[in-house]
Length: 434
Ligand SMILES: O=C(O)CCC(=O)C(=O)O
Ligand SMILES: [Fe+2]
Image (cartoon, rainbow, N blue to C red; front, top):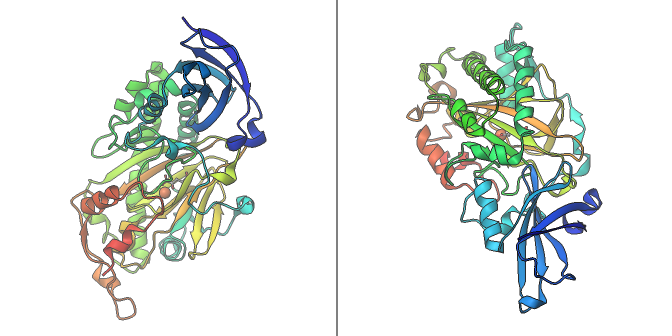
């Protein structure tokens, strides 16, 4: 029933010379079509694959266009299963398989000039300027508070999480993203409203065509790592290894987050438990693996567009590839130099408001590059959903008057989720200003 042919095509609009020629094999469901009909590569989208809508103009069909949807593995540029579809089928296929909102239009997923400010090419020089703090040094509390005030970001070394665990987690995360797309998609988010599972990053903070894939797993109130991984179907030793690495890491990161809250409280001149006593063994935290495949035109897209995190602290593990950038003083993007022994920590909007703005959550983004995939494993730490956040009275003074209203964490998050999908980021903190 099908006829297989090999085509050479170019994608000048999207990839320029970087993918000068993609060889792909098209299986057509209508063998009777004219031999001289040509295919034109029309649009491209990627997760771990490049999706191509091949535009087939057929005179025999009354001059109308017919679209065929072809999925091509971008690493080796050799096609896998190719199915003929209509344009809307193809769009639906992309939406469903990416775990994305079905209501969106295809155009939003096609790589194109972004409406976000794009990076200049020279921004990849890494900076040593971001403070690196030894968690057990004398003065760690003061250094942490100063870094939270001046940068909203810092790296920590001597953090107590063994390097062996960090390396194991990095290795398992890489292996996960190297699985075939079809397999990863078995853990795709179950509904358009879910953030969890495999897919591209969603939410108000990310560009809809972010050059990345992600695997997001709930950690509290109960770990959902195994539930997601069971759907993937990998051999038992790999399954166990992956789940154990994530569970051990998340458990240690949770303790670290509490320790950081206590040190920062001390550094701000407060009682150590000012923030942490509101947690009493309960938090809202998740783990997300972000993976940024090499990109032929890194200046035309971003891995993650500028955003701040809405939680308390984010603890981020990088590998050796740079890409994370922090907006310093609302003015200059600084690249965080990868340090395999260190963890990158940033203040979230909730802690910002809780401290009455004494410490700050800042915008950050991720760049992509042409040659190497980049990985980050992120632990997002937030309070229990019912926690009421009141700016700490001791941090209100005549030279720092009360700036934020009190709020319940889950209402703050709900409001952020309602605003998701907005293309230009607006800080959720604005809605809390008095
Ligand atoms: O991958 C990175 O370096 C940044 C990730 C990030 O900002 C996020 O997931 O919120
Ligand atoms: Fe972030």
